[in-house]
Length: 385
Image (cartoon, rainbow, N blue to C red; front, side, top):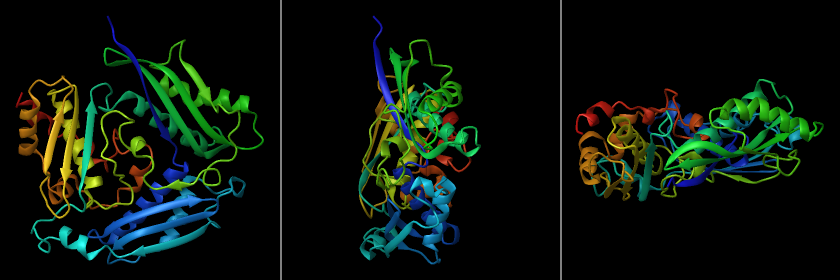
């Protein structure tokens, strides 16, 4: 008898308050890395009605006009109309940034700490995940959710739906049969809009211009749609909901599939293994699935501050592996760089590439900056089967 279940994931647009914060934090990181790739950055952002607060630690040799970076980011997202209640030109900006703690720095700088290699910037556990259910080797619910939110932004910016405002969310419930996605059961869209547009028009336009083009391969006559389910979404963005960096960690990763170590990515330079080791874990899991060793794979890496090698490596192929998990773990040690310095070098992470990652997911992307999405190790791994 077939086993059926429904799995749901969500995404948010670049104008969602939490995503504004992620993009600001990563825009500041990019500015530091442009002129000083050795910059150490840990930046948190908060947005509220008419206000942006940036705080954290940063050690860099370059000057950054942080208020300018903040305002340009808010403008690019689309908060350029005073009717929205939040505007790039006249929002208040508060900045409180100190240098990185010297106690942390000596554990990360080569040759300065207790161990001579570049150590991890913090302790923690990181997960990577991949599955063969989509071409991106990602779970279908999160991929569809991201595509819907990206499409919301596209039709807003190209004026296909000129009444849309920057804030928005999506949610996709996918029906699985025997572990394979078969159809979309429910699609949810919340799209901020102007005061003077009728809600019925918003629902009709979004269904035809946003939802159906993205979900056509999985939508059937039983699929349910909820578009602006309260009946109105005029007030949005920071005036309606305070935003904070790192509050969309499941949106950023796999939509609830697999595990999560709890650390966010945005605002952190790659010496922080929260970010770099999560990228490496995805790279490993994706190459394992691309090689045919497994149909589904989760990789856990764990680190201690100041020490280079991971203290543990764990693989789970959920019963889909062509070899046992212990053997796969040995292949990971053979083929992949796992020290912070090795990860940074192999994935070329000391570049200003991070602002782009801060909306629509860090994984399942084909842009050149996303080096952790390459499957260049798959052939070598396949030869080990």
